Length: 103
Image (cartoon, rainbow, N blue to C red; front, side):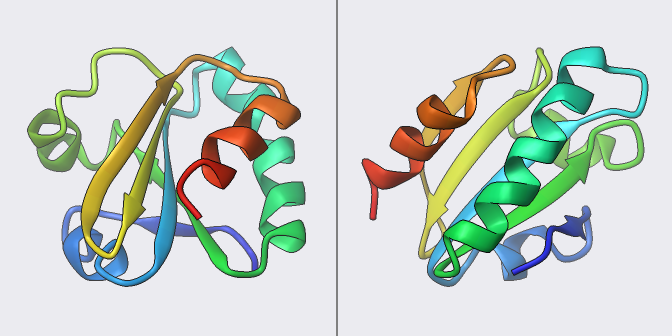
């Protein structure tokens, strides 16, 4: 499953079903760019997990509602519920374990 963008308008809909990992990022963020290829890989390896990207510069309303203060921030939703949160550029094994903990 390829990564797709999520925004203020579709955030609640896109996170309401199944396991959804939301990557809160910005274009200018170096660590965010380091995490992006890892999430691309995981999106093909973990077909049952929807991985989405929220650009905090363009979706400030949602970022503010979620209390995002540092990026990258990974948010893990299960059927609409926020079940976990990780901050910082984590290595692939750690991100995979972060998701596996809630499968």
